[in-house]
Image 1 (tube, rainbow, N blue to C red):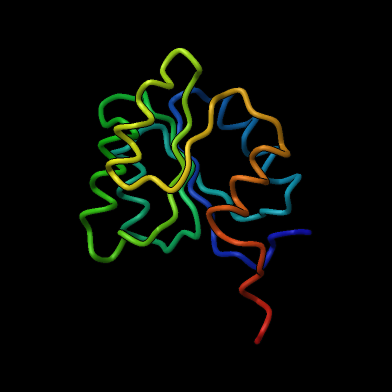
Image 2 (image 1 turned 90 degrees about the horizontal axis):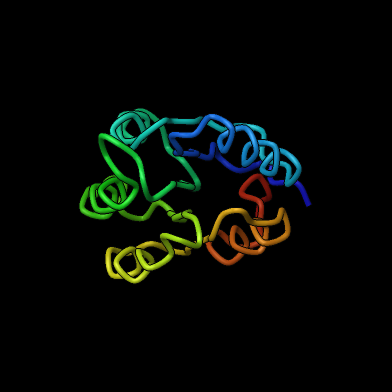
Length: 134
């Protein structure tokens, strides 16, 4: 089922190849409006300019980490309800408890399969399309 009716997704990672791979997976899932940022500082600027249905963020970036971005999002009344998924490698998965305490909606270990990403998005955002009327 395509997600073409959803508002844009924000993808945050400092590795251009990861951005392209995750963007391709999101495209396979039907997401068409995907913005990217190379770190939390750039992502925060985008979040203040545009409404996103989902943030997918890496943990380890400079100058602002994904964890710091998450903390900013959760303390900003205009952003705090934004679904947020943290991504990192198995070697850094010990960061997930801190992310959960900070209010992350889900955590993903890279690399992940398209089906795992889809499953996570459904768990976080639901399986409905906002362009449908009730």
